[in-house]
Image (cartoon, rainbow, N blue to C red; front, side, top):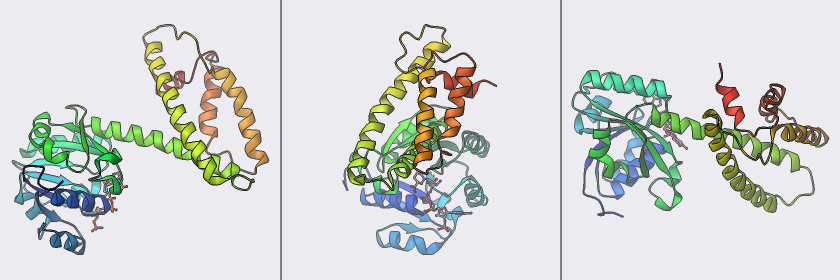
Length: 296
Ligand code: FVH
C-alpha cells in the first residue's frame, strides 16, 4: 500500500511489459523512480504517474545509487550500459540471463567500482505488486547490496536471496523455467489427445491441473532419492520403477497414434528412460535419470 515503505529513490532502465509493471508498483508505493527506455514514448504513461524521465541511459544511471535493469536480453544490457559511468552504483539486473552472463556482469561491475546483484523474476507482469499472486524474484551476488536494498526490492514481488555467486539466481530461474517447459509440453500433448473426442474440456482442465499438482509433489520427492543415491544409500522401496514406466510408455505411444497425435513432445524423455533400463536401472525410479543427464 502507498506509504507503507520509507520513500527511496531508484532508476529503472527498460519499460517493456515487466519494467512498466515494476515502475508502476514502486511509484504506487511512494518511491521516487527515474525511468529510461530506448523507445521514449513508453515512458510517458509513467511520467504521468510521477516518474522522472531521463534523456539517456547514462543520465538514468547517474541519477540514483540504485539502478535496476529490466531489458530484453543480455545483449540489450550491454548496449544500454555502454556509455554509462558505473562507479559507485548498485546495479540490479532483472533481465533474464544465463549464470555465466550474470558472473560476467558481476566481474565488470566490480572492475568499474560498482556492486552487482542479478535477479531472476518468477512472475508475469500481472503478478507484480500483487503479493497474494505468489510471485517472487531470485537474487544472487553482493550480499551487502541485497541487505542495503532488500526493502525496496521486495515491493514489486517477494525477494529470495540465493547466494554470493552471481550466477545462482539465473540458475534457479532457468531450472524452474526448464521444468515449466516440460510441463507445458505435457499439457500440450494431453489437450491434443482429447481435442477431437467427446470430452468436456472445462472439466478436463480441472482434472489435469489437480493431477499435475499432485504429481509435482511426488516428482520432487523422487529427486530427494537422487541425493540419497549419490551418497550410495539404498533407495528403499521404489513405488514406480523405470521398467514398469517404460512398459507403460508403449500404451501412451499407441494411444497417441490412435488419436492421430504426434508423440514428438514425449519421445525425448521416453528415450532417456529406455536408456536407463538398457543400462540396468530398471528397478530404480526416475531420479536415476538426473544422473544419466549429468554423466559426461
Ligand atoms: N513478461 C514476462 O512474462 C516475463 C516474466 C519473467 C521475466 N521476464 C523477463 O523480463 C525481461 C523483460 O521482459 P519484458 O516482458 O519487459 O519484455 P518486453 O516487453 O519485450 O520489453 C523489452 C524491453 O527491452 C528493451 N530493449 C530491447 N532491446 C534493447 C536494446 N538493444 N537496447 C535497449 N533496450 C532494449 C525494450 O525497449 P523498446 O523496444 O521499448 O525500445 C523494452 O523496454 C526479459 O529479460 C524477460 O525474459 C519477463
